[in-house]
Image (cartoon, rainbow, N blue to C red; front, side, top):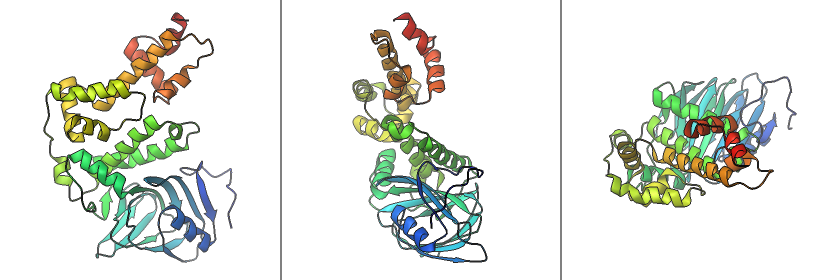
Length: 335
């Protein structure tokens, strides 16, 4: 039976995207199956199941919040075409992988990765809460290949348990939480593909760097760089396609180099990152629209959103930093 939210209880992550809130184990099992993967779910202890699942996403990426509020055990088959990244935000869980690996998680301290080809069992404590990311193999492995500049032909061998208290682990944890907040914002990043694709890439980069895996040595080795001439096709592509969703992986392919080499080369030759350069180009396009505007009803936020700037205060501060005036002042001067 679904339960109505209590207005006196603090909102949970992604509450704008509810899937189910139930005390019925069959409904809970079906919701997890439909959102993530099939499972054999059992509960124990004295507490009554009070399961809540909120989730946003589709085929390539799903981000959700999950809690059972009761001792719960899930046996899950290999996810096959997906990686699952369980970030424990409260309480704790205990995981057992079919290859004999065992790991514990604690809120804000550690997490688990479920691999496509290995089954898993996870025991949830009664106070456990998680933010769970599900990436398609195609999305994550293609991104890893672009990041390194080499093919990825087999599942990435992530460690089962990993630490969220390290610098890189904390970055992964913070980026996933930030994504949950932004996906919950009405009219925010869900309606802005320019920004959403950049955020997805950021989270995947953090995952590949934070969780030890069979490519960690390559990923953590300083990449080679190329000269400014090799970057010209990338700079030209940005200028010609700034109004389209552009990812670091796409820019790397244009330049025929890895994402890591692309970043290092931009920093070396231009003193900035490729995505920061893209943001500067888009900001210049915003300014050009404000200067040439003939519509007395033009809304600055509409122009900013169209170019991938969806936080009005941050956009205004960045605009003033670049051009020495607020966007409203530009609009007024050229009215």
